[in-house]
Length: 281
Image (tube, rainbow, N blue to C red; front, side, top):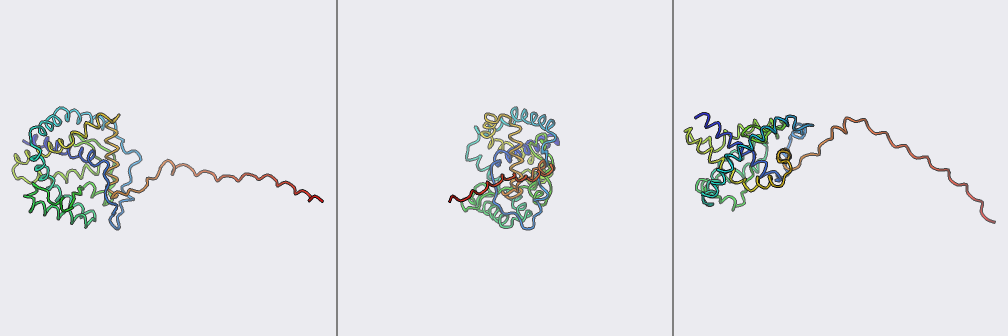
């Protein structure tokens, strides 16, 4: 049973990580950096963000094989068999549970207004949306603004560390790897008391997330020359953008900083002025 739960947890985190990259890779958040934040000095990207590329590529290939052999076929069957209305309801309930943790993280990041809006969204969908089955909050313009504990650590000044591809988890870095642990412990699978029910929720959550990504992953396979590089760059860019609330500072070029300053240009010697001609009498 413990092996089943670990595998289910890994499948959920893999789908969650992939959704962060592919669904949010081009998204930006409002530029509203919390007052007094020292994140600008602490979360600058490393000079070489992928020092473990050889290892990461091997793990990426392993995850891709598992996805194509298991997760993708199951997600395709789920989308074909389960009616759209039912799938939407399941996605709403799971999303409503995650919104609780997002609201808490917004408050921890110093985004009080966004945190309160997310809290109101949870209350609205819970009490007026049949426990989150429906989504009346979106109609009231209480839109979902998801965040996680990895971004909270970034707002607190923790550097991201090297890029990592974790087995079953997918794209990450040192900081976000720690954040994923907290996110999973507060996710939908943490609510049921019984291990069997928790496993079922974990698998349902993983399949639901993977089904939402079917068209996106197919596009990447057909367009990206190197999917590994595409996903890595999109992930790192999106996470850095989110830490700075959509307004990351310009990166300093280390090579330019280490090189000696260029000598001042020498002024060109001016040609002697022609002698003034005598005025014609």
